Length: 276
Image (cartoon, rainbow, N blue to C red; front, top):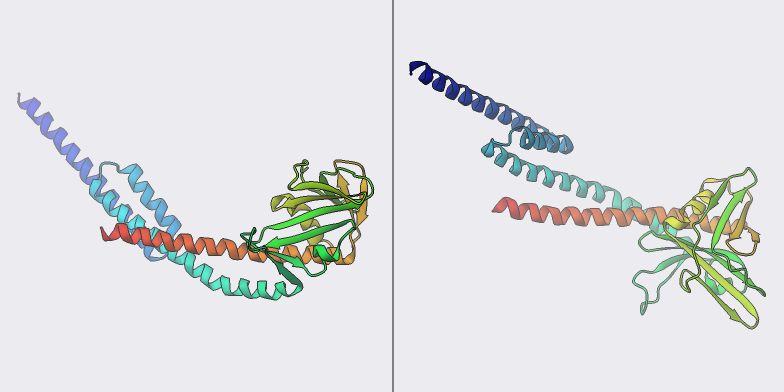
């Protein structure tokens, strides 16, 4: 009986010691996480807090403190994001305004949610009844290109390929005829075809024009139908380069504005939780 009692006491002592040891280790990790938070090492602090929840699931009091700390870490992270956006947005907006000087702005308020910036020589009015590569970018930074065909007979093309003399090639995905992104019409015996490539669909071909020397000759092939080839003029290349550059800046601005808005909303939600 005495042996049984002794074993029970020994087991209880062992459990108490283990529990105290886990609590001590959990608190130590929490202090480390607090130090990381105070030094604005938010990502590392979050990992440290996560480890407390994983390694010490029974330490409820410590985990409760860790939850509050996690909210403070996420708040600090959001404040850091806002500060970063606030520092860069004025610079990028100034760049955008300077780049816009070569463009005209078009927006049909009855139908369009966002307007488009078109290089001044690329407007439809200046390019009627000819084959050319049209390009533009909307206010959110999404670039588009269009292969425009005008001729007496249809070619029913669905794509566009650029290539240079040294063998560099870039190609759009095929855009099947749908009456929207790929549409055709006849007028006075002539056919007009316009195939549009938006966002990622035009990025590869636009990037090729952007990165190569402006004097490099670029062949444009209309693909997917009857063969048709034209060569980009110096003005075409200039327009595509300028549009691509404006698209990158406007896209950055749009992304930072969204990130700032998300971070501000997150801070509001965190503050509401911390006040409860």
